[in-house]
Structure formats: structure tokens, C-alpha cells
Length: 184
Image (cartoon, rainbow, N blue to C red; front, side, top):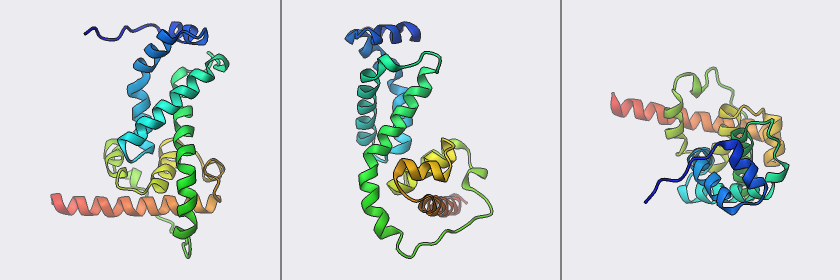
């Protein structure tokens, strides 16, 4: 079996814009690993990440003609994957928001989990977070969105975003402490 042919990114995009199914398949194969990496940060289950990636590629192919080559393709693809993952989780998160936030208050912290861990450690521990906390942690700590932007994206108040981020960090701290004690 032959490995997939690698074609220059600009040529792939040009051919995809013209509607070439062959080139769409090549683009998918060329960026699949990158896309799954992004999808897995937002989805707890691998199957969910795969669905998000496939849905995102459908959106990419449907809107390829409007893609602006002045913007890096990976950045555009990443944005579509993130938005697809968030759209997919939005309904589920809305149902949980009302019950989880009853009586909740914001817990400020002096340090962030990110200060004491490398990226791979955080990514491994993040799989233990509930979906809403995982999404908000990713958006805030990794992708750099602020709470107002996250609130708009998830259709929640910015204060709820802060609460969920605080809870995610607290859970990560507990996981770190437990892991440190078990290895110590």
C-alpha cells in the first residue's frame, strides 16, 4: 500500500476550491493528525473527537471558496474545529449549567495549574475534567480567549466561565496532588 501523496498546501487548497474530490481527500489525510490533536483537546472520547473532525472538514470543504489564502490554513482549520466542538457540546453544556451552578461562587486562586506543569502533563490530566470544564479550560488557558469571548461562544455568562475555569483548575490541582503522592 502506497503512502498518501503529499502535495504543497497551496496547490491542495487551489484544487479543493475548484471542487476536486481527490484533493479534498488528500487535504483531509494531510491535516487529519493535526485536526485530531485539536479535536481531542475538546472532546473526552476519541469517537466524539473523530465526529468533530469529520464535521469540521465538511464545513471546511463547504466554505473552501471563501477561504482567504492570506491567513494560514492551519489557523483557519483550527478555528473551524474548535467552533465545531463547541457547537457540538453547547446543548449538552446548557443542560448541565443550570444544575451545576446553583449556589456556585467564584474561587480565585493565587497560582494557576499551568504555572507548575508542562503542556503534556496538563493535556493528560485534562481528560479527567467534565466536558464543560474541559472546553472552558482549553478556550481560556490554551487558546487564549477571555471570559467574555467564552461566554459569547458558549452562550453563558462570563461569570459562569470564570466559575467553571476555577473548578477545572481546582480539580487539576487535586489530580496533581494525588498523582504526586502516589509517585512519592
